[in-house]
Length: 153
Length: 261
Image (cartoon, rainbow over all chains, first blue to last red; front, side, top):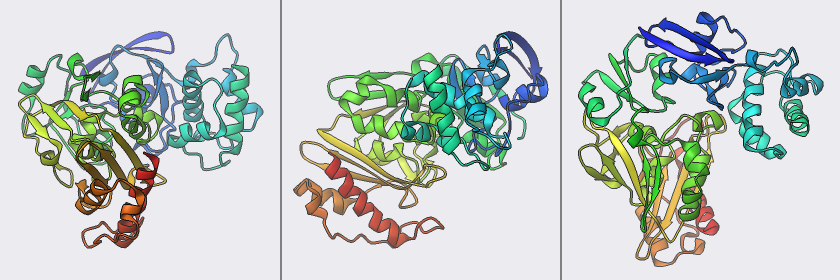
C-alpha cells in the first residue's frame, strides 16, 4: 500500500491505496470523480485526460503513487462560482459533442493547448487533439469549439 | 493489472540496488504501464526513477547535446537549445505519440524499450549517440541489439544520451495514422566525413542503411539516391505496409530528408 497525497481540484486528499492503483481509477473509485472517463484504457483515446501540475496527461497510464504530492485538475474542477469554464461553454455553443463520452478529455486537452498557444490554427488544434478520439460528431465542431474558446479566453 | 511494489528512490545507487530479475525501472510509463495492464509484462518491483533529479535536463557543450534519460519528449521538443543546435531532434521529439504522451514519455524509456517502430533509436544511430549508463558508455551502434532488445544488463540504468551535433540533419516519418509510430522513419545526419542514414520501422530493429549512407557520403543530394532499390527481404510486412512498400518508403523518405536539409 502507498499513501497518496494529492491536491485535487483545490482540495487536499490523502488515501491509502495499493501500489499499482492507476490515477483514473483513483479519481473515479476513491474520490468518486466520475467525470474522468475511461475509454480504451491503453492511452490512445484520451477520454481520461486530466491536468497534473498544469499539464495534460492520460490518467489511465499514470500511477497514482507516481504523482504523489501533485496538483490534479479534473473536468469537475473547471467550474468556478457555478459557471462553466469558457471551454465548456464553447463546446456547448458550437455543438462540439454528441454522446459526450470523449468530451471531458477533449476539454482538458484543449485547455492545455490554449495555455501553450493562445490563438491556434485549425491545423494546430487538430494536431494537438490527435490523442483524443471522438466517435460521434467527427471533429469539425470540436475544432470550432476550441477556436470559439480561444477567442473568449 | 497485477500488483507490484512501487519504489521511488532519490538516487541512482538506491535505484540500482533495488533492481532484480523481477523488477523494471519506470520512467514515463507510456509503454510499460499499458503493457502491464494488458498482462504482457509483470514485475514484482517497479522502480520509479523520475525522482532522481540528476537524470533530467538538457546540456549543450561544444560538440554534443546531452539529454538526461527522464527528460520528457515535450521538453526536448520545446528546448531552445535543442532547436538551435539539432533542430531535427526537437522535431522528432515533437512528433512522438500525442501531446499527452509527450508530456510523460522520456528519451531513456524510449531507447531502453527499443520498439522497432520508435523514433528515438533512429536519432541515436544517425547522430552517433553515446548512451551513458550508471556503469559505462555504450555507442548507439552497439546498444540496439534487436527487437525490444538492448545491450543493457539487469539493473543497468540509462543516465543520459549524448548526441553529436551534425552539420545538417533531418528526420522524416511516415506515421501510422492511429499510433503515430513510424511505419518507416528516416533520420539522416551529415558530418564532415560521413553521412548516416538511420532507419526505424522498416526492420525488426533500427539500423543504418549502408548503401544510402555511402551514396549520400559521396554526394549529398537527393539525385545521388534517385532510383535506388533496396533489398526488402528483411523488411517488416504487416497490415499497414508490405516489405516492398517499406523498402520504397525508405528511399522516398531519405530523399525528403535530404531535400529538407
